[in-house]
Image (tube, rainbow, N blue to C red; front, side):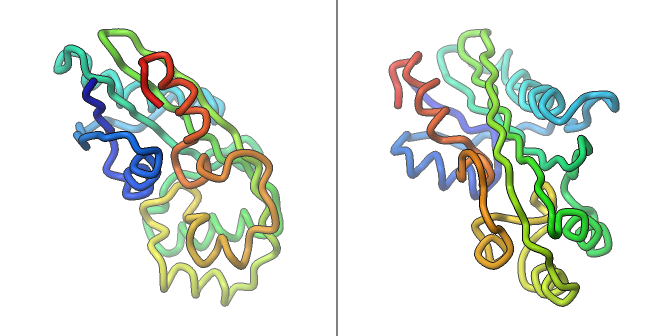
Length: 187
């Protein structure tokens, strides 16, 4: 069965490759907005499903894997920062606090969509303003929910602990995905 990863994320590509699953990357432009009243889990599921549904008329027997990752603190979603000021604000909100990373995955096969999600608690130590500036100046926080990548410098120096899946925070909960793919004869 042909697998389509509906994501340009280099992190998702790397994780799916590590799983040993051959796939092709195909991306469709999708409005990633979600209803204002949606809680972070519902919002992530909503966007992941929209990404999968974009393929519904284009595939026959392929399996589409679409995902959306959100960072939430105090019930508020922190998306991808638009600029340095927004990235700084997000990292200041996360500094010294616990937040959640939610990744929802939508699997589309023969018109049916299966959606699942994982939630990981992430604990940041308190960051000095200079550390936040260093991270923003030397890394790419603008394509990441919550303005950080756990696999980068900030993950090594600022994250005290996590509760849940590490790969979920990177952008794709691979252990859970592996279980779900068994339904399709894959894993």
